[in-house]
Length: 227
Image (cartoon, rainbow, N blue to C red):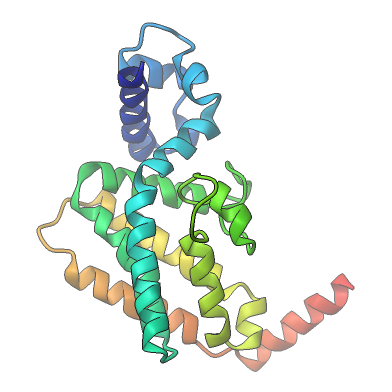
């Protein structure tokens, strides 16, 4: 039974990366996995969101461990800095470029993040306890907060107040996810170090970019209209 589940995950991961989540039916996943039961996906995962969550959970332990280690080092250093935080966002994901499953994951993650209507429960919540259940790993009751939520908390004091209210952190997350997916689609490469370092530079620039007077004024007008 576990073998069938893994074959379904392998098939879904490959098809979703090749064609996008919305373009692949559950029936196609069953057929590609060679499963005999037409309802195998529903049995093991419930629905499309369930199988996507399971794919993300496959890669979560290593990503979580890497990011928490970088954030631990950042806090131990005690020196606020945008590039170190940018590296903590990028490097754990960039490590996935080294194998086919990781590259598929990066493309699926970008698809999950970059859509107007969430496929999964919100993955970028402010509440670490909730994000531990619904985030990139999908695993509940973690001993530490979700690493992405921890990253968000550590980035907040580094940002200008106006940058924070304009969702600068999500902009950085989305840009990193998009660029990593683009790199994954064009891979494999023999060396991703330059790409990774430059992506960290750009993410650090996104986090540190000043908010213009025009943007600040327009944000004030938007907020006033919402009251």
